[in-house]
Image 1 (cartoon, helix red, strand yellow):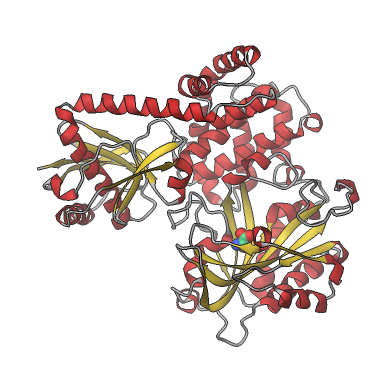
Image 2: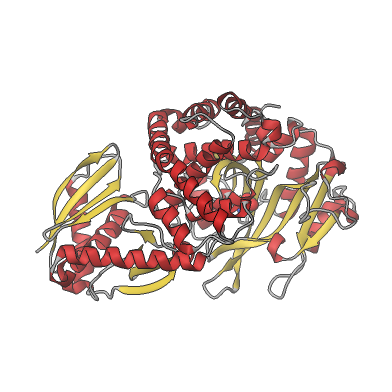
Length: 590
Ligand code: SER
């Protein structure tokens, strides 16, 4: 079964069962506390929590979709048989239980078995099931265990696990969650470690692949980490599209299915190596180019912060692996074209944005190509003479040759070396301080006025996102002694009304005389708590987050004023186009 047919079959199956087909939401989640959409349920989280009523917006409690997802946590795993950065998740939902015809555990389990066995003709004997073992907060899921048994799954194939595997969610720090029950597919002994305790979630081998996750949403995890019982119960499921496609096409991994094979074959044409002997490299390149195509199609650009950093990291990683398999310079472009070809009918945005996608990839490749060779030489020289890669060396590779720290770590690992990350961070911090001092000097007067304009820029960013929506992303910023300039992604000219709203909102926040809070934390933590990036400066591991109540929260090196009341009156003096889909605002403080 080709993959397009699988996608359609899933949607049709649930449509027949009176589910409404909902389109995939963007890879940029509306909840800004997380970087990417990593699960199908994100666009429905407010319905699952009970804040919104699905009947009002969808006229039904039953939904089905195929969601584009991106997980940067799995980057290290890429190359094995079952992980991808970008992937698609098929899902069905039953939200709330107050009506006849809604389903919970039994319905979800029966539908899943019916789809896999009757529609896809998978062999039930290969299914293994996991359930939640229970903990101090949430009881063991004996109910699901019984339903599986009643539906023909023998007891010995049902295994229980702790919260790490079988208590799903929330996606961010807080949110809806619940115990889950998964279907794992036994790929056969040849994929196994042959240890007696091998089974689903085996840490040694990939014999058992999780294909379908059925989540029974019943709780809300709050700020304190406690589980609050929701007033309603819901079903959230996620079926791994690539994994099932591989099974149906009788392939070891998705890389050999119609989703990737044309790209893998193209890589073979563009380099001097064969896939069979270099699977990991080929797979990483194919995965990363696909991820990049989708990210760029949604307006992400390579940069040193947030999502842009992830995009840069996967593109540069693909380029480095390209070097290893001796791929021709410029090899990413034909691969991007192949990827677009595969997906253009299902996701028209990859086709309509083709020109942008190719330009961004080409530019990034040219940029990194220039320094890659020199950086590799430098790395070699250093690694051959010492037992570890010092933070200074890693920082130099980052600063002068554009090597993301993770790439240096990966190269070091290949040589059996470690990188002194602590020292790397210290170097970064030093650098950050130097550039900050430089900035303050440039502004003169101890930077007092520049502090005001910095804070005003944060307020402007916050106001733009309030008025125009969260898709507004900072693309650049510049401050002189007279004005601030702010570039952001937005597809059209702002109306005079919108500009007025933005200006008024900023002035309102100035009037409220809010405190500008400053907090230092790890970059990871900052991004997790939803801080946005401000200056496009180098990517530090420890960052300062400035926040103005809930209105604005950004990673920034400062400096800022203490209270917004110090700013005076904010005035927009110009709004214009900066480049395609990027607007520019200039503003002053009076
Ligand atoms: N939310 C669950 C997951 O991501 C099921 O859709 O696995």
